[in-house]
Amino acid sequence: NEARFHLSFLGNDEELENITYLFANYITKTLSEASSIPKTPQALNERIAVLSSFLQEPGPRGLEYHLARLYSIRDKNDDLENSVIHGKRSLGLKDPHRWLFLAKQLTKLGRNEEAVEILKDGIIKLPIEGDLRILYQASAEILNELDRNDEAILLLEDGLKTIPSDKG
Image (cartoon, rainbow, N blue to C red; front, side, top):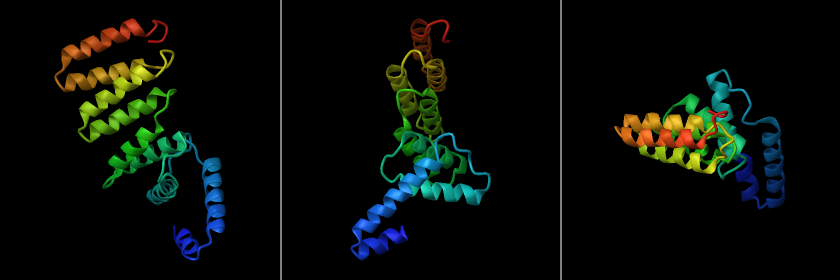
């Protein structure tokens, strides 16, 4: 950030673009959603600082998911809110576990209604071939916590009709 400030202040936009490109290239080649979680608090803080700087605007979904998980693990101050922001950016049409992760972060924040809506959205958007069972189950559990048992039962019945028996 400091280099960006000085280069911008000096009007050296071309050099700034070059550094930005190199930084982005380095991050995307060295980190992914499968990257291991740093073991020490200092390393965790450094990884969060680097990725949060890189992902000020929406970026690669895998890196968004990795950063969301890092915030969740650190769990200080606004980390859960940041985990939700990056968790939402990570959602795609392949991995139901990202949808489940986001719903869990929302429930930690007491936003159970929003968690149910996220899970239901995932059920609609993700292909049946995916592991939708986990989204149906998590939705029903949250609905039960909200004393919406009838709705939970209807949702599970819908899941039994929708998911092929060899997938659930």
